[in-house]
View 1 (tube, rainbow, N blue to C red):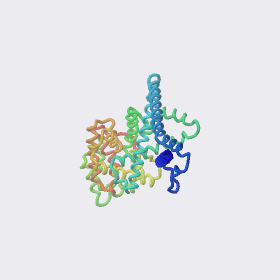
View 2: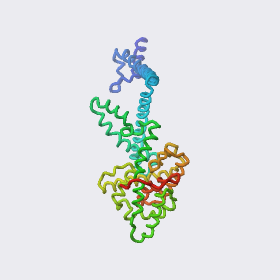
View 3: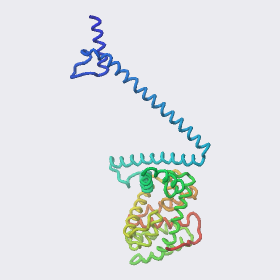
View 4: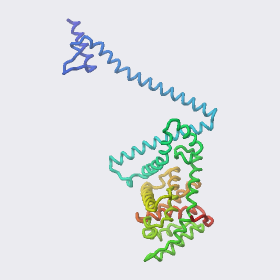
Length: 366
């Protein structure tokens, strides 16, 4: 009798631990097989998870060891290829990190109903840069989809990194070099933009400001850097014909497009729409940066902020970048949405001769 009670209790306790119940009646009281099944379930529950974790850590550690040995071999035997390999690995890591950040920002915008213009500066800039990177990077991914095409793409990326790769896959030396090349494309259009301002014919009650606009344009063309007050003096002209974006001459818009790395080979109405969209985005970035405070930017963010506004900051010191960005924000903070055309022209007015007096601008007006 005592043995049978002990057997029943052992069955009952094991059954409760493993949770074998049917319609509220414990199966262990009636099944002779529950004891072995229960013990097996307990062992599986309390030992298999630890085994999986241990084997997982073992696999990860072995992979890390193999990867370290492989990188060491490349670094010793093929240093140039190792530099390329390291740049690509680091680039993918940064790209995935940015993708996760963008997903987090988009999720917060949806859940909290936050508009783009209300985002913090760093989130707004992250979305802008990621969108540009995807526009450049997706065509390359599509080309590499056919079988064995990825080998050809890899060779092309090796020989044409500036044209095919996005910034994540540039090393620090390439970053400075390629930004200098792209900035040289912008400077080719500086004289044409200034000549367009100089030849602008202002009608009506604002006609007296035309002489100030011409003086401002001539001053920059002769190599002088303008004052912020001189730009503020003519800002009302940029909300009306013929300097507002929607009423600007098509040839003037075509010269402004390269300042924002936009193609000028589009119909006039499409160019006007794209310039308006990018100018508003730049104004929103300026307002978000003013809320944050430019002193909060690190060196990399500061150079990037200056570069996107038309200045080749990679050839300047950090103090010069901070001084110039302060001047830019003084101009931007006083602008209305209807005057964003001045923001685009300031990419020439404030950058052409900074930080020192330059020789008179020369170049083609085509």
